Amino acid sequence: MGIVNINDDSFCGDGTLDVSDAMDQARRQEALGAEIIDVGAESARTNRAAITCDEEIARLLPFIQSFHREPWPDPVPLLSVNTWRPEVVAAVLPEGVDLLNDMSALPDETNARLCAKHGTALLIMHSIGVPKVPHTHVTYENILETLDVFFSEKIALAESCGLRRDQLVLDPGIDFAKQREDNLRIYAGLDRLHRFGAPILLPVSRKSVIGQVLNLPNPLDRDPGTVACIAAGVRLGAQIFRVHEVSAACQAVKVLHWLHRASENSPCPSHG
Image (cartoon, rainbow, N blue to C red):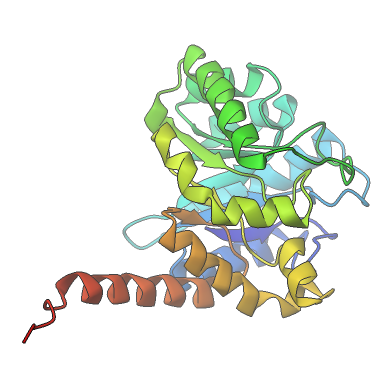
């Protein structure tokens, strides 16, 4: 999943307010191996003011329309839209969206019902409180048990709105209302989420936890650490990786795939 930001305050500095530039980014990411393009118009940074719903819609709609006019090679990449306010969701889903990347932690049924209405898959991300508000004080007695309870409740809510299990994607919400140790525990215990029978998205790219571990305050220095997190995610069965640097991520996943195949096909060691 390649990241395209239609804003001017992305934490990596890779955003643009020019739809043509954003589409150029999407084309490059697809050519490098991205199978999903995730577009967002509002930075998730909590030290930046929220934009209005009207502004977010005005940024997203031209990109979505251009995306569907693009003569993509086969297979056509899926389009994911990173938004959470119901007013915006209601405006963009009719334009043709494969996945709603919702960082609101599904506080009610509204977005799930909109996804069911338009046949859009829904990503459920774990977090606490309202997006765009810092939650640096939040700690957990056991983050993995917290995720178990959270996803059990939110999946039941989504299914009650008419979404099937195969229309759901789970995101443990790395760096969202979590501190360093809880983020690391999620990486280590990610395979627990397979019991829900839905794909797991691991949002690893240039995350703060990587910077904390490696003492790298600049997000642009964190791509090697991102690849390490991808390798851990592959080992634990994550199916989708949301990344800025698509080339390195795709190469890492392909090499890990072939190494896994080689280990499965290796002959048993001889004895005696």
